Figure 1: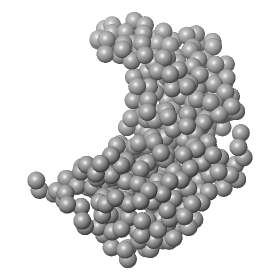
Figure 2 (figure 1 turned 120 degrees about the vertical axis):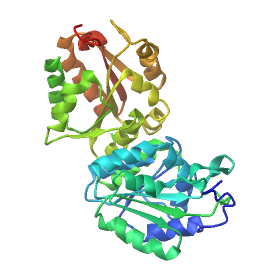
Figure 3 (figure 1 turned 180 degrees about the vertical axis):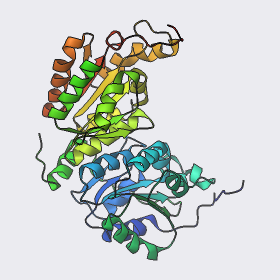
Figure 4 (figure 1 turned 90 degrees about the horizontal axis):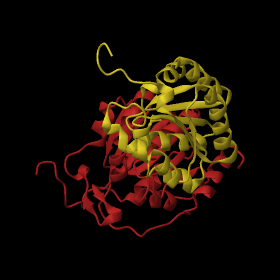
Amino acid sequence: MAGRELTGRDGLDRRLASARLLSACPKALVIAGLGSATYDLFAAGDRSANFYLWGAMGGAAAMGLGLALAQPRRPVLVLTGDGEQLMGMGALATVGVQRPLNLAVVVLDNGRFAETGMQPSHTAQGVSLPAVASGCGFAWTLDISEMDALKPLGARIQAMQGCGLARIKVRAEEVARTLPSRDGVWLKNRFRSALGFPPM
Amino acid sequence: MAAWQDRIFEVLKAGNVKQVAYVPDAGHARLIERVEDSAEMRGIVLTTEEEGVALACGAWLGGERAVLLMQSSGVGNCVNMFSLVSNCRFPFLTLVTMRGEWAEFNPWQVPMAKATQSVLESMGFSVYRVARADDVEETVQAAVDLAFESDQAVAVLLAQRLIGRKSWLAGN
């Protein structure tokens, strides 16, 4: 079938790519989509301004939108995978209407549902998330397949000059899991404390 | 109908709610109009209701109060996303206009109407139901307080009888 790339050997190392990106946008408030993106964010270095999703599939971008509107002076990064973003594709339309200057969605795209057995996803079969975001009115979209592009991407996220989506092509491969806390109440209170909000 | 919707607007405004996410419903039309005209609140139109659940949780992470407006059919779209609310004990408030329960013309609204309250309660919500216009203000105020002062998931069901019959046919 045209557009398929089912071998999955192409692309960047997801851990190296996410670590490079996150080191280039240290001011960002970060929400990670469930599965590999949550493990990647934790592996890149745990911090209070990280929020790890372990469920709520399809909700990461919408959650990032609520956060970005509430914190307009902080860059907000939603780091997620292709499967998670595909489930929340409507949220890209919702973001495209609000267009917060400080929101970036970065999709680590391995073209697979990695958590459940590496089944090929839609993005391995011709569906382009940057094209969807562009059609939804995002200010910028990027399709990244080189490590050299990640430092500029981090700088762009911190510049807060328009909402954007970047797809980073990563290899479809099993990576050792690195597991952050699964305690949602603790993660919430820790994140809010970093912004100066007390617990209940 | 407009009067009690205006009172909801005033309660949300006084309650410092900043983000109002919605999938439109005729029963919420006046409130949505007031929100979109407001300088203090931002209306956020959604493609599906569960976006509003995640959005409200993100807003709270960033220190803002949000509310989700939807009709009863939308509750069914949200069920798995409600696990975000309960796992993290996010304060969460939704105002649900009921369809399919009183003088309904469209039978496709009925199954979800019958399930709405039990689905919400199954997912851990406190559910308030309002059937009289005079009770709307006090009930929504109580829901705002329970949600945001006690970090609870709260739904207010606005009865279809309160909203009134939908006119389906010319001359009806």
